[in-house]
Length: 87
Image (spheres, helix red, strand yellow):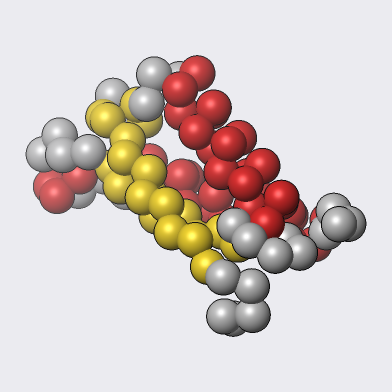
């Protein structure tokens, strides 16, 4: 199995984009104190499975380190996996 830098960069970019978007939005529906939900879809099997698992572990580790909070609100990560060849 080879580490695919392009897929990793895309996943990191997507994570940063979604996180910054959630923090930047400041309107009534976000001010209500409801948890921020971040959806993540990674390939968890096949050739890119190790990259998806590493990215998922890194994401979970990051939120554990910051106490599962962004901007004072709880964060819920919703993980979805795809099978090799689905996309």
